[in-house]
Amino acid sequence: MLNIFIKGGPVMYPLLACSIISLTVIIERFFFWIRVSVYHNQSLVDNILELCRAGDWESVKAKATGSKDHIIRILVTGILHRQFSMAKAMESAAAEEIKKMRRYMRVLDTMITVAPLLGIFGTVIGIITSFEILGSAGIEHPEAVTAGIAQALITTATGLGIAILTVFPYNYFNSNVEYAALAIEKYATSLEIVYEKLPEASDKQVGG
Image (cartoon, rainbow, N blue to C red; front, side):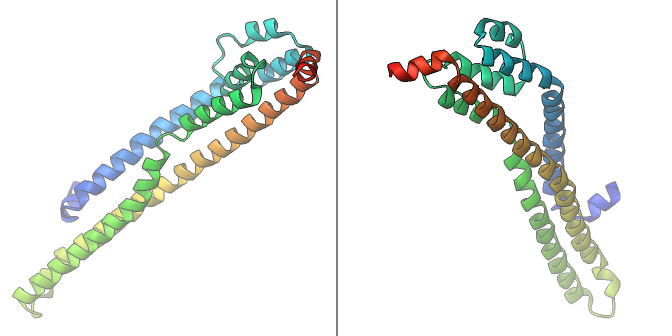
């Protein structure tokens, strides 16, 4: 591997940086989504909605205390601001949660774009080097240009390899964000519907 890296020429160094950045972000996001999955408590979410349906806010507070589930955090934010604007409070909390889920995704997107371009750049440099060597050595010695051709092929393959291996986790993380956003919208809407049917919400609307 070291021999191939050296043969790839100077462009291999930024490609190495791209691979390290991509791998670091992929590992970080992988553990992030593991934590999201571990912290998610579907039964507690359903229980809190039931308590909200009964208007038992004290029990909701007791149940939700200490929970690290992102959906519960959003619902609790809406409940705490139910006398003002439940929908806007949950919308703001949801935006903050989605922002955390999308963190570093632009970095992966950039690596997917930049790595193949660097590979092509290395290819161009390798071909230029080959022609320079061919011009000085003459066509009688074609073996002299093999180093430049090898450099061109190695950088192209490396750039494409980085992009291909990055695009799969990138799409996986994006699909997780979309799924989480739909789940947040579903439960936030459910809470709004439940609250609107409560007497205190009706009294507030009549009073307003």
